[in-house]
Length: 213
Image 1: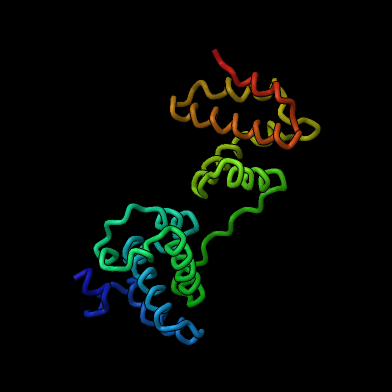
Image 2: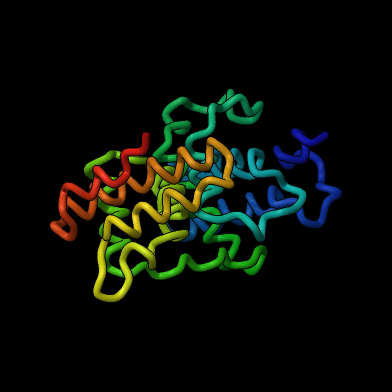
């Protein structure tokens, strides 16, 4: 029944079923001048995204991170297996899912995703460095950024950047945490210090402060 509802062959019993808006979305794309072939491809990915996300709730929590997870997922969705492989690529999944999400928000079907907080110049540059110099995925960058924000003001406070004493204090503060959490903190801390060194904001010898015996 779920697949029949997805295909629009039977009416959905769920008032929140996102798939019921697929037909309206296709019409809106056609009205904007997209060719029938392009509309077919974009609607295919929109339906795939709806199936993967789940039609019956939680769409107000869908955001950029959700879209990235969808774009990268190892697909075994029944609705997607019959689709052209070229429309299962990461780039097309990401693009078409984001467009469908914007449509749903614009129609008032779901709430607008929470706005990402504005980053200061240094943190924005760090994200760019992770993407270009380290080839990190958007999800990986978000994870690094989340960790950096825990101790960012300690390292980059007023009139001080990356002092040895502060770096050591951050390490000592991790003693109560799990091994995995400590590992993530140390990895991210080293990454951020390397970034500051590359920008000339701290001495290369600061990395030595992160060596623990």
